[in-house]
Length: 486
Image (tube, rainbow, N blue to C red; front, side, top):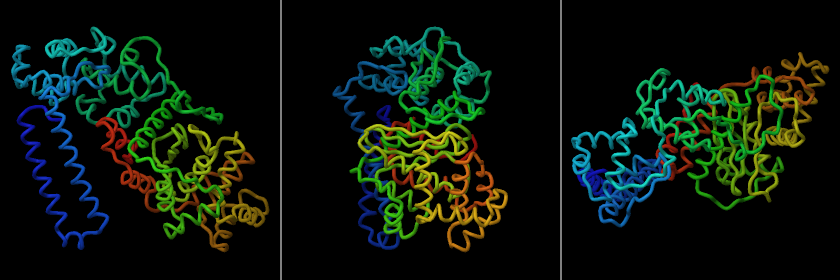
């Protein structure tokens, strides 16, 4: 965002430089032949995107200067920092002019705007609003706010949102950067920082800032995410499950917003057809090919690797499917099995514009019929229609003894030339139907290769256009894609 005449001139100079670079690069036939075509096109696209963004910034600044655009009303605190800057420009005031109205130095206004007013008191913000003639809804502000990070963390923990999730996933870095020593629970927040935090979290969970900062009860509204079908483990924390699922649903909405909608071809729900379509397009049946194939069908895949909460989800929102996979295993075969399991859900009840399926974990004993169908579909896709036949071979050679399966299953897989990993996953599913938890053994039979989370993340980042999102939402998506502990 351009905030003054100096930045306006610099931005115009940058625009001219980028436009010249684009022309020169497009004419450079040597680059077009030496650089990989995909990379060459990506560099052209990046230059065009930067040019478009600068054009937009310049147009916005000029429209404010000429009075074509006027900022008259503000409805949420999240909009306030930019609205104050836009309001000043629309009022025909320089930073120096506003400073004089408030009996401040010009450098003070420059600092306010550079940090998006994050360290400013409510009293000062109200003075600036009055000086600019802006109108703000009363609920945006709360009088005499005195709030510590500890107060905020404790209040949110009661409803299942723990401190680590807030810091690492829920607070955009640009907001956290304005709060020094954010891990210090005893730190008192400025009024501006309190409201900025409350406004952003409120946007995600459907609360007003006043609801978060008051002493009244708040809760997690799960009406938008669908009903969790399965009974949870006795150790499952329902509040955390609900909170994390709302967060994941919000991410899904952002990814859909950043992904161009395409015509909705049907997802093949016959195992051989699904497998053959992937192989015919990507020449092999591996995780990367399946991920790209689904993106081609307009089904974004969002990978997450945080601890606990749900296991996976498939949402249909306004007719568009999106799958969220949350795994911490590095087994590519396991990711592939779970992904195709969710694909089966995405292919069901196509007449419904909105649909949701949320999985708790693979150990649940309450396996509904459609869950069994989804796992059988995944097994037959991966094992080329031989899933049940191969399981029976393993059981026969183990003489029906579960403890012998760990040694007989690899032998059967090698003899029949199928993946040990894939067969182990399917065996674990089949045993779960008899209330036998064999997933730990199946995990021990998995081989490790390129991190599946990274594969899914890299594909997502090449497929979405994050420029369509606000700065904070863009940061939220990128933070979710960080492969670290939470």
